[in-house]
Image 1 (tube, one colour):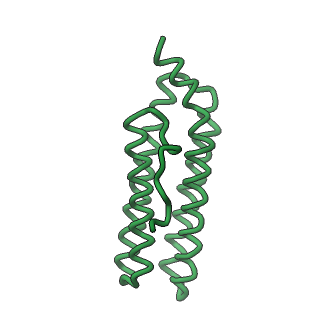
Image 2 (cartoon, rainbow, N blue to C red; image 1 turned 180 degrees about the vertical axis):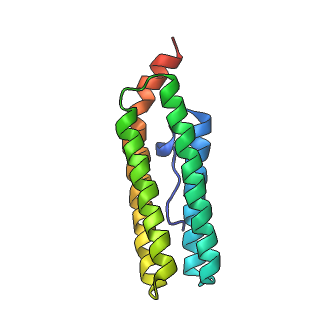
Image 3 (cartoon, one colour; image 1 turned 90 degrees about the vertical axis):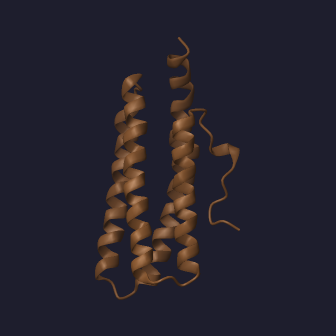
Length: 137
């Protein structure tokens, strides 16, 4: 069973965004499986780095779309993205200097799951009606 179950509930109706959200879920599930199977710490670190880079790429895509259509809540949405990036950076830094990598990794996984689900189903879903209305004009 995957760590995060992808369902149609995650869909925004914007194919590029939906593909990227699905990729974030896949990367998070892959990270979870590597941790569960006891992969070497450097493998886990590589996947975390990939996830971090892909999240950054996704946020840029999403923000460009919101900028293009003058989404009024872009500043607060962007702040959520920045907080996510800062938190992952903090986790990565702590992981490099920690003897308790397993404990820290469990915290990262909990954060990723909670954040992805609440952000996509909450914050991201808020822009859908606005952008759909703007695009269909």
